Image 1 (cartoon, rainbow, N blue to C red):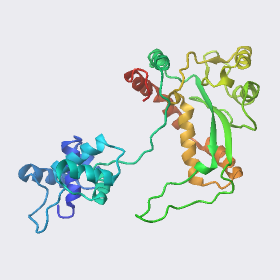
Image 2: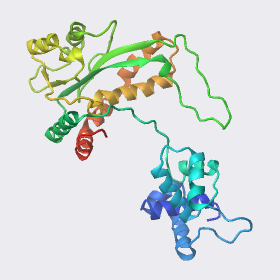
Image 3: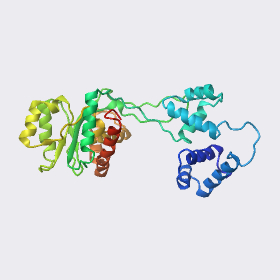
Image 4: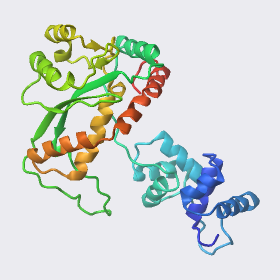
Length: 327
């Protein structure tokens, strides 16, 4: 066990006792042998520690007990900085742990990673009821016959790459030709088909919207009565002109689509996939942004779209568990 640091050994104990992972899962996580993991756990059971022998100097403050306390703190205050967690740990236990150690433990031992919170609209009771009813009524559907659609605004100034830098180092920058450059597009996806993507040349009103559908949806959507079209409750989508067009062309719409429910629209996940693709290409102007949008649309695998569709019952289950509220 000499090649394993105490931090890794405590991680093994944490993964086994608190997360209840198997020996093979732990070995894969820490990139070590199953036998080595078994020896670490055996020593912990026998001695209550993970070290091979007593060492001179100050013992590590991050033993199993303090590691569990830190894990609880991070769970309770998952938006705290490492400095704030260090202060909280000191206030609650008297133990002084450096922010640097907390950052390391949070990332490696506790396997936490940073995510940006989603900004969602607070829902009224009627809106939650519609979301709940839709989920209850459709949770057993496979949605293989639905075309999911929406518009998406891609903004050049938001196509930055995430960098991990040393403390005190300046944040990298990327030069672009026009900070205000943006591209509004429309698209639709389904289990087996994908529309051509449309770059909007003006503000989308009902007349322009139906022109888009005529050019990009109808040639793609099979003319079978079992196929449905999904769009949200934006004003061009619900306008009288659009409803008349849908009736005249025989395009049937998913009924009772709930408001403020982007997690139910598969194409929102497609936009996220495309955004990651575009960010990697680092476009510098509107022309490049348009080119990479089209490239991303063409490159997204149909199997990825199908996976998003297959995940809808799980999303609806979460909405039901939340009684229609945001998830």
